[in-house]
Amino acid sequence: MADLKRTLQPGRWLDLKRLFGLIICLPMLVAPLSAATLAVLYPEAPPPYKQVFDQIVDGIDERHADRLIRYPLETRYNPEQVLAQLDRDQVDMVITLGRRGYSLINDINGHYPFVSGALPLTPNGTLSGVSLITDPDNLFSQLNVLSPVTKRVFVLYTAKSRWMVELAKVSAKKKGLELWAYEVNTLSDAVRKYEEVLDNARNGSDAIWLPLDKVTANETVILPMLLREAWDRRLVMFSSKPSHVKRGALFSIYPNNQQSGERLAEMVKELFSGKTMPGVEPSRSLHLGVNLRTAVHLGMEYSPTLTRSFYRTFPQP
Image (cartoon, rainbow, N blue to C red; front, top):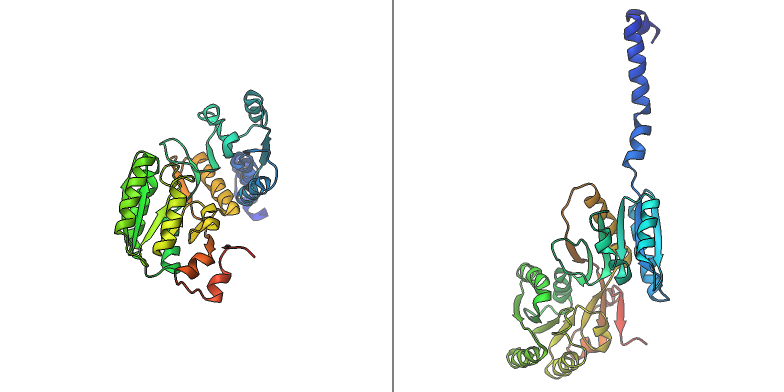
């Protein structure tokens, strides 16, 4: 360094010292600019719902290395106070969980990049988040494992579920399945169409998929009818709603809350940095719930290794 100093003119040496100083200080100047404050808005809830939100927030925390602020929302919260607090805390981006947080999106939109979770979200062109609705690709993968003889799947859906059925059509083709999909509008339409499906279904091999649809998976009319008919005709019935497994559906997939939180953190960062456009993703959890009584009735035999891999089994002892 002394030799270098002697070979340079005094002015040049001063410029070089300044350059070295700038290089040394550059990480300290850049670090605060790259750090981002993330706010998570979620409802205050009693157990077991509290555990669900805690697990999602843990997943968010796992993926977000910078400042994370939690905002638990009471049942009767003041939206203006929440928004003012976000401003005071110099928040850069927001994640909303559940309906209570989701109710703020109209106020948040345009002020912060945000994503939503812990809801059965459907795409609308502007919303981003992870839906509670299971990716049909995961459902069909499990169908191939649990009922390898099944090659034909029937599904009824309404317009609100059309986006999911479009994904299912692509997935079914990849999985070697025939997907017979019928769009209906009303509950009476669904009942009539299900009667046609049941008359044409091949006992012992065909399957009926119940999507997360309030009409075609109606809990009062449709579900009891299909559970009864599927049992009597030995048809595989699987569902996008986990609670249907306990009632007799062969299988469903439960949300992976930690995984959802991790993906939400990744998505909001991508929006914040301008890397992606808004969009809704289905849940890609692999937490499989299986009704073993239904499986035995259908003649299915699962190895102990496979059975141990199930997230939940029914009936529970």
